[in-house]
Image 1 (cartoon, rainbow, N blue to C red):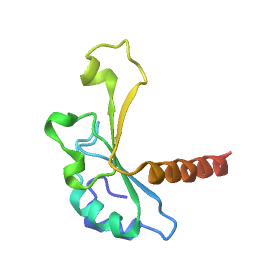
Image 2: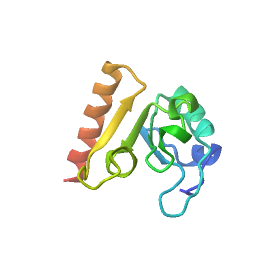
Image 3: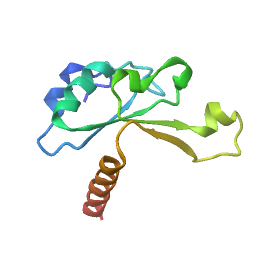
Length: 115
């Protein structure tokens, strides 16, 4: 899939697609995805969208205003500003608890298939 994906993501969505993971801008290459276009295609198909918002930070990018369901933020980089919080992540959901539980179950099934 091209890193600067937008509405053309439809070409990569299958009937079993449950989740789309975005990072915009990309950490190393700084490509920008068309987040509203992706979420507009995902919502009617009941596909959850997740955005790693570490690089842009919540100060510069408001994922929920763009239709994203789950936003994650690395605490190590901007929230802490130091290295004592390795591998910690702040997560905020823009979906209901029941939908989040269903998502976690679906993800667990996917990981089981990788064993």
